[in-house]
Image (cartoon, rainbow, N blue to C red; front, side, top):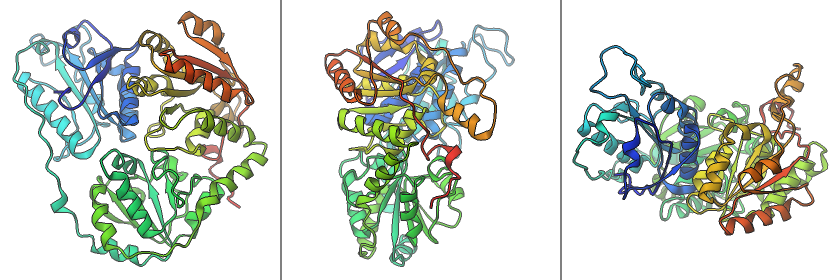
Length: 536
């Protein structure tokens, strides 16, 4: 069923209860990882790179719980993940736990608050009762993914059912809802009344670009409105190169000024979450229209907006109905002005130099996966992304330790992947260096070693707290790399481009590479301790 749905690769770790999942000769390829959390991140990374549904398989109890943090990151970030875990034998289970190995009272329950909801509002976290129930549930999860383009689902299978006979059923193709679009007249009226509209594009807009003709839909709508375009982190790379794309985060004065000058805002495929909006400190024009396939949480975050509950495919109709607008803003030089200012500011000089080195050295077809680290914050917010789905950034739930295991997902598709991590976050998944080496994945790992948790150290300084728990002992990176048969080089800002080009060359040969840099980096304005700084 997964293969029929287009899944070619899954990630997992074998355990005594789930061995039948590995006894499949003709299903999707299974890449074995060193920790279940990495399986979830890898599945997420595959999905974020445009690879469709990411799947992780785990064993019972501790194995299932180990994947929970990465499941949450994918779910909150509107990525697509399916976790399939074994559960204790239904033949042995009783009403109360009895001490079966790995037994839990309800293994699906921890996944329920994070999982997607079906049409009846039930969480997609389920333990199969029998073989037919397992097959039907999986079919429903796959149908949800087909219809909505995303899903976060958990399926538990008692170990005695894993080898049970069953009748596979074809995954139903969700019926299109193009004939049931909501009434667009209020939205058309609101948009036509805007003299200075602005557009806010989120991850939902990036997902539209995965469809045939999806990017053309967005281009046509933007050209009709002639509105400056701001993107969320998940929307970075959408409409790349278009002259109306601001290419500066709203956290910076230049991006802030564009939004502050607008008298209307059209939000496409975004929750307008706290990280992208500086916890809703960004200026909001008086008239707001939101189009999203889900009403929450955008309805909470924009309580005064006109909300259109629809897939972004509705843009084809909306573009025909709204009036053509005259251009009112030329944002084409906004990013250059921002960079010039930051380059002249000692706090931003190294950050912008890092961004520009990676822009030059890392190609458009390759992937960029960053962690919750100072180098990652600079790249996620400030690097120009030449295409949608190039950047993966764990800003949904904010899970540290994302970059290295998530890079497994995009690299498993043959996409050269630059994983950018700090020396602290890397330690969360250090064992995945073994996976990279064993699978010969095209990954270049850029380690920014600032002696520990640099962002948290800055937080403590800003808040006046003593610096505790943030200065960390790191391994000798070259010796560590050599232990896994991976070559490593050091680089500073002057030699970083050359080091990344060296990494690309190795990746083309099926060889991973590690680049270590120790440059000082000041956190950018996209980080929360700086959100309150004046915009003047």
